[in-house]
Length: 82
Image (cartoon, rainbow, N blue to C red; front, side):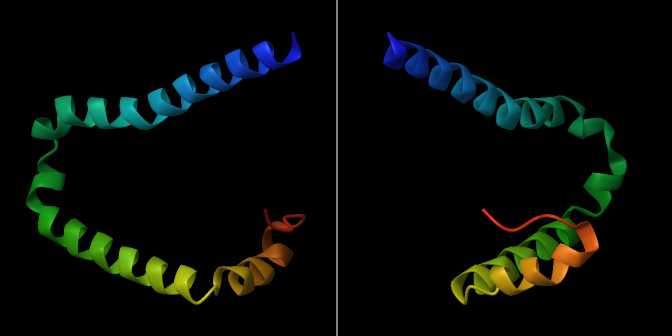
């Protein structure tokens, strides 16, 4: 039936979604010890990441993302939103 295929398709898409999110983190756990640059500047990355999270929260809370997208449409062309 049609709905059975939709369920299978949804499961396949979720598996690839989870793999796409988890594989980069797994790879980073194995090679992080060899990356001295990341170790040396870890605090800076954390602070910058924290500020970016706060900025994104403010942008999403006040719904400024729509204005940002409207400004970027001429630059990238054709994107009209979700």
